[in-house]
Image (tube, rainbow over all chains, first blue to last red; front, side, top):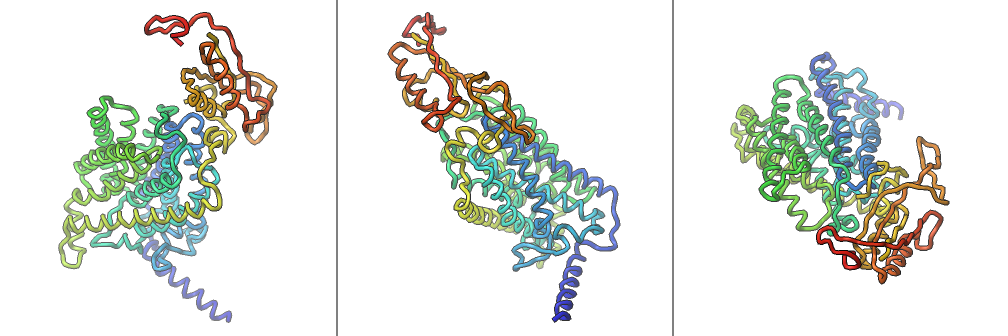
Length: 444
Length: 114
């Protein structure tokens, strides 16, 4: 009995070591340049979360400002802990349950990576923490879809479940070396920094919940005005800065591919922002500050999956396309009347889809040559890649929508997700936190 | 003409405003004020329960013609009470005589300008 157990343990250990060996070789040494950049990127991506808190926080009414900011901040607490316990293992472990998610006992509480150095020359701790930041921001993005009307307790439970059941499996499929989308087609589905994993999944899930919960009181007939566009603008700025860590850091290197991603990021954000205020000027007659901020985000979201493969002109085109389509999506939302309060789907969902699909037409030639060489018959066309991209987007959308629906349907039976009418009128700050965001600011 | 000034709880603002709109009283001014009353509320600060000196309230000002005084007051009374039955700190209503009312755009004076 004891011997069998030991044998099993040994086999399991060998199996883990064997597969982990592909990933982390014992012979790798720390490359200080790469590690320094990855540490910086990790900090930059964390900076996006207060950035998001400010962006969303400024857009709600003054009675909900702290509650909305807390949606982002509490994600830093919950998801960080969850990531160490199970998230990293589920995302980057070896395939289990037919590849539905990953698992690796070494990653449980990160206990087995104390001396591990990845082949890229980065301590695995850094990679793990870097990826953990992505896991934090994704559920925080969803909060924009049901802002101003969600119970804090239900939100906390929701993001825990969502992270475990939606984010970790998706992340595993797209980014883990054994993931099935990572290996789809000649060189895999292209998702450089999280177009499908982060933005499409968050946007689609947000849309599902926004429709499931219904709108805020008085929407759309009563004007619901932002309490402080100044902090929204500052938040958008921080997001732009942080996005360099998000995209350029996703190269897990410090070299040519990092430089490419960084350049594409800057260009797409700028072209998105400019396109948005031009469209808005033509359509409504005025270029708004919020429009500029929305354009920045649309451009950044669209370039996220594409930053590694597009040339600068491609990034420029993606920024323009993202703004056109996101702007249209928001107009359509207003027609349809569902309450995606801060346009989590309109910007992140639509922008992510635009980026993941249209990047197929803008891939740099050298990448396509490598893909052709890697394919079975030596050819790989734009249309082949488009098929792969469309499949990845479709799978991410369907999976995120279905799982989110199941989670909220079951969770709603346990804890009421939507705020009671009294709580919604009193505001999230007072109802769930017993605090106020501002002193004597007039009610909006 | 009367000026009705109501000091109410912050949390009741939406209810009062909706009730006033339903009663077709739409011309109101709302501001955030703070003051002392009989009420003592506790707030959390760094994990300690504290009683703040000045309690934040909402002040609603409504100028009405004589015929609308009762309906306005009744509407506020009904909608500003905590849980509909009332508790200490629900606020007060003051009614003061209003000497003149002038619409800036047209220069109209008196009851028609309200």
